[in-house]
Amino acid sequence: MLARVANNLFWMGRYIERSEHVARYLNVNYFSSLDAPNELSQSRQFVLRSMLFMASDPVTDPNIELDEGQVLFDIALNKEKPDSIINYLQYARENANSARDLISTELYESLNKFYHYTLNYSPEKFMKSGLYEFTVHVAESTSILRGKIRGTLLHDDVYSIIMLGINIERATQIIRIINAKYNDANLAGGSYGDHLKNSYEWTTLLKCAESYDMMRRYYKKAPRSLTTLEFLILNPNCPRSIMNSLNQVSRHISDLSKSKTPDKNSAEFLVGKVRAEYQFKLIEEIEEDLQSFIEKILNTLNDIAKKIEIEYFL
Image (cartoon, rainbow, N blue to C red; front, top):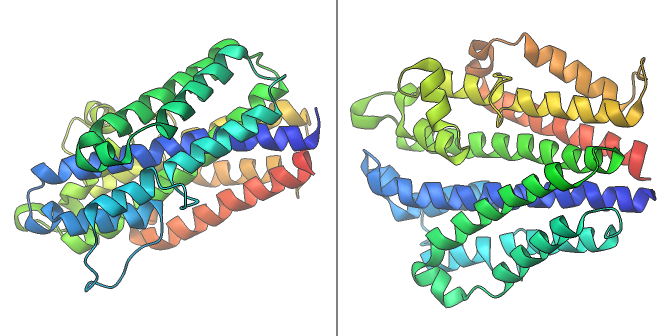
């Protein structure tokens, strides 16, 4: 296939995944704040700043009074904002259009239907009472799209390229969510006088990643900072974890390169190096300086994406 078409498939996968994580972050943070155990976590201004911190440009000035309806509209449906959900879906659809002959009719129709649902969603309804309906529909529709990708495409180079985009974006968004909730936890403190490690924000973080129930099942105790971070970063069996995403990226990039001895400057080599580092990483080491880890892994994921682009899309 043409390098340009491969690039479009890669970014189609990324934009689909990105729209889901942003939508779920809006949903979970907005409605979880109603049950938050401390006053700051219940504050609507605190929640809106958290949304902007994760999905858009953070607002650091505490004197700025944010308008709830405008913030939600900007992140979800504002076509003038390049990092809104509606624009992510438009970008995904445009990328799919250019690779129409390589993807299934079922996948394209599902994406097209999803885009038009978003395009025709009433901004007035959304800002007044549609946040839950809209964000749930986005999350469910992206799950349908991933099902169409896995269930209707040949598992060949086209599939591998799309899955590379999905998994690199998933790891990136999970790290961005961890960063946002870590910031929230530092600001809000613990619940009922507890310290940071027992903050309610760790529960919210797990729900943002659809991992709360499985984390409780795995550790058999309430979320704390250490167990939450370990589950979402290092656990290879958690489908939302950074380690699981790196494993998937390694698998699909190996399918594309078909090289037994990857060049030390290749994307495949870098992915293997990062996997090996985190496979034997202790979560206590990460928690000691979480902010440095977040910056490092975001830069690494960006480097992997750039190397993939140079090797396969130029």
